[in-house]
Amino acid sequence: MDQEKVSEMLRSIETECRFTQGYTGIESFKPEVMAALARVPREKFVPHYLKALAYENQPLPIGDGQTISQPYIVALMTDLLCPEKDHVILEVGAGSGYQAAVLSQLVKKVHTIEIVPALAEKAAQTLKELGYLNIEIHQRDASRGLQEHAPFDGIIVTAAASHVPQVLKEQLKPGGRLVIPVGGPQMSQDLLLIQKNKRGEFTSKNILPVVFVPFTGELNADDNLK
Image (tube, helix red, strand yellow):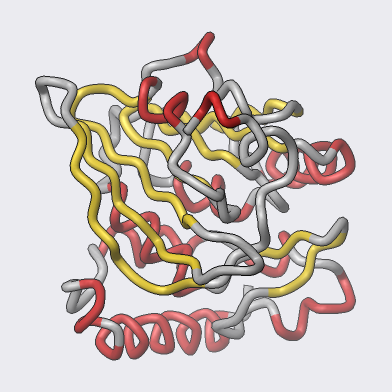
């Protein structure tokens, strides 16, 4: 990794964090979150022709109509999860595997779902080559979550859903957190933090206006999941 570029990326994240504090209420991200971003070689998760831009604080296309999220957004969503070393996390939308790689530095296990076969295969190969052994990729539609490994300490969704799926709320442990962008191509999107208390009751907080690629598959289409 080019440490100068990594340092510049981290400074840019910190600047944007302060700039958006009025929305998020977050003045700075947890040191362990920033350290995780510093350790993950983002250039390994972008197409070869975009490697020169890998540490810019911006999203980049990764093929099949999908993107790797802006580093600031990765830091924000990771920070909102409040990950701990013994946590098991579900990610919905593996993409290139970058967000999972960051989370893997902070938690016991990451399960990540990817509907696009080519992306799932490429992400699995990249993560294996880089030695991220506590990440398991599941190539499938995410409309039913990942019941066989539920419940989860945290769930992170990396594409915009039309609503907060009930199935994901049900697969969250009491005390757990769900971070999800909600909205659509014809409407505004907002990043939400959903918290489940010990009694199984939910609270929702609007964090920040965002722009994510829309969800593919049945997660948006099934009215029974609303």
